[in-house]
Length: 363
Length: 164
Image (cartoon, rainbow over all chains, first blue to last red; front, side, top):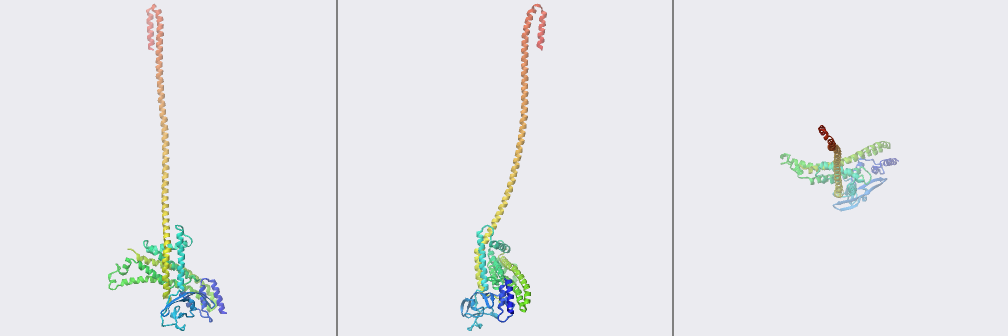
């Protein structure tokens, strides 16, 4: 009876809050035969982490998931490609692989011994090239970008010399903003045109993924810009572009700056070391800032939702009582995240542009 | 720890797919978009400049027009003034001429009259002298016979007539 009541309560919440439908249903997964305790930490992390299947909701005992492709390479078994449904949501092993559940193996694909249960501790972790939830999210957002901006480009060819129409007029102010207020002002009139395409791409990639992270309905909702791999990748691109485009002056400043006294460069190359550290720190900061901002936003918004269930477990009444407050806070957080989405996309692009400006500065 | 450990697979797919999209967007989206934006900005700039130029030309034209109108007005006034002057001159000249002519005519008339008068007087004188001669003849015819006194008288009379 209590279980039913809780379910009804959650159903009501679901209908009220269409956005976060997946949160509510995941909470259900924790309830099996015994009323398992709701663990906010696990619940939140489940949404932050990458996964080998795209969990949409759970109805009763059935998990509704989008199956994804598993691609692994192990020393003993070579390349293996199969569908994630073979794991039965981590319950079963397949072809000697299994989804790790606990400890250091949590969420990772591990090799198992012949019994199909015990983890092969001796074998190194297989190389996991699976199309995970975040990979799908990345693909989806990139395809979305291609679709949007190719049609925008088509609009420019069609309405040549005329005022923008449709999606064009939506994209144009942002493109102009990136070009004029980020690229031109940070890099300078002479050089900015070379970097504008890259800056536009990272800006829109970050923006689209930040925003899609706020929409919890498939195919959105993957925590992409809150994933350190993605932000590392983006920062790496910025780093590579900066390094490739560094001019003579830039490298001279790194290795042999004329304004630094010689004894700081020889025999111990103190300043060059610091400069090289600085070169690495810049993209590192880009990576951490975006990751931390997006992840923390998600964690806080989800934390407010967890409050409902934490109190709901004490008593349904308190749960009901807390829910409006939690919803209000979540909405507030989502609004804040919306703002942060734009700000972080702007900051990442602006700092990249500033680094490019530093690398190409003429004296 | 998992939160901050980059995943190899995701990294691989991200680098590959992002590079491809970066290339595709750069070639097929950003290039035409940025070119079109630049072109449009240039054409707007040009249009604004030409509008400015046209406006300047317009104001020039207007000034020119005003100048022309002003000059035309001046010309007209000048013409009218000149015409008036000419008219006055003509009238004056005509008056002077007419005066002169009239004077001349009068003069002529006077001289003619004088001449006529003289001629008439002369004629009359001749006539008178003829008549006088006749008279005198007659008188003389009669008187000469009578006395010398009468002859003297006649001569005296004739003398008087001549003076007149």
